[in-house]
Image (cartoon, rainbow, N blue to C red; front, side, top):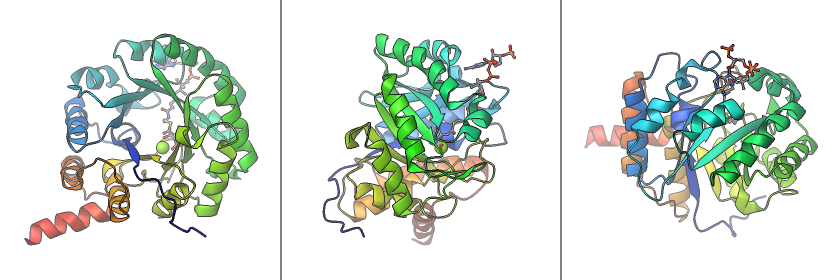
Length: 307
Ligand code: HMG
Ligand code: MG
């Protein structure tokens, strides 16, 4: 049971809305809208933004405008802009756009690895190794995303040992920090804590982030469970956008607005202005023609409309 006594005093949120959030949108989102979203997120106080990915445009058409988006951003000092690079081809393409951090992305599940990046876990590590090496030589930070750390759409439950195995492989090739991702949002607090405990065999708590999709409505509970273990880095998505194209039925990441409300309510500092964040949420939701997938954003927008 959580005691809520030893929570971290501050939390760093990485907004993955422009990437994880938008990658699954069927309607094309113009690069200018993505750029404006990034600008609004940084204006709201986000200090880490996952902007885009350098993957095959045949696999993920929505991310085909990666160069235009990265080139279109007016960078703010103190903000870290990260991008996904699954292989050397992606890394070389990204290099021209000078990301602060690249993300290699693997899975604790063999089946998901095959569906998502078309190779086994072992092959993925072979592909990532030269990417990590080249990034570190170029002075670019390296994060590793670990998908399906509690459940997989193809294999069902994933044992913590498999998370430890992947974390060890990531560590072995020089990845500096990792995301413990519940890709399909099936986790509950104890299972998520077990995945984090497995990761702690290879990374210290300052180099582990929680990445929880909210498909089953458990992401805030899972965030609290991770906080209770001392995790203080989390990925979330403005307006709760998103989902992975290779995890059918999985919905978006936990909404950044909801996490900020939770944290501020517990006296935990994020450096984020929730009103400005809700403006960003309304901006992208209006473009997409729907309400934000965030209880907090909807509540705050309703309150604004009434006053
Ligand atoms: P592949 O087909 O195995 O690659 O794809 P290949 O090396 O055999 O090349 C095939 C074709 O793809 C060639 O083009 C390559 O040039 C091209 P062709 O000659 O046929 O015209 N290609 C590329 N093009 C652009 N950028 C590249 C690149 N690499 C090869 N980097 C690959 C392998 C990984 C590229 C492919 O499977 C792919 O793009 N997959 C998409 C994966 C993806 O973006 N998934 C969503 C993000 S992960 C996620 O959402 C989970 C996360 O949020 C955490 C969580 O929640 O779990 C991070
Ligand atoms: Mg994700």
